[in-house]
Length: 146
Image 1: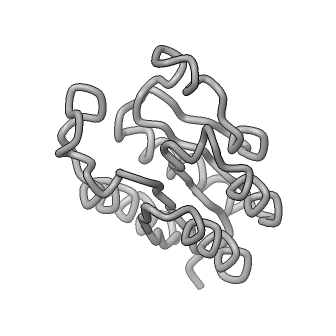
Image 2: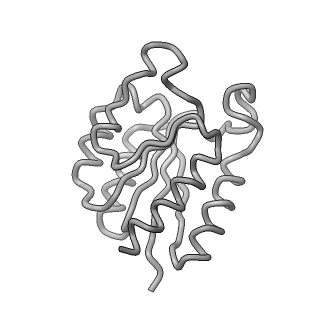
């Protein structure tokens, strides 16, 4: 049976490839999903990519992941810096969690330097562009197959 990894994306990531390409690049979430699915398929792991602009939906997906996923890759976007609710939900998840940021958040505005999600994350990828998702998926494959 294939293992399942949720790839959760927060606010405004539906505009990836269109919004501020000088920061986030021109690749889309569909490109991210394709890359992660290819890595997963080659290793017996299924990737389920989800995106919402609503904090409560992200929390609900984390709760759902508790029942069916072995790992979570999450780019909470702006919720990284504001959402204790997302952190609390992640704290209920028993599998590995990898946090992804497309940009190098520590070279940006000071308010982006702190992430609540990092308090739960087992690893953090920042500044690798959308390739950070693929790197996170490669690492997650190792974690969920152990």
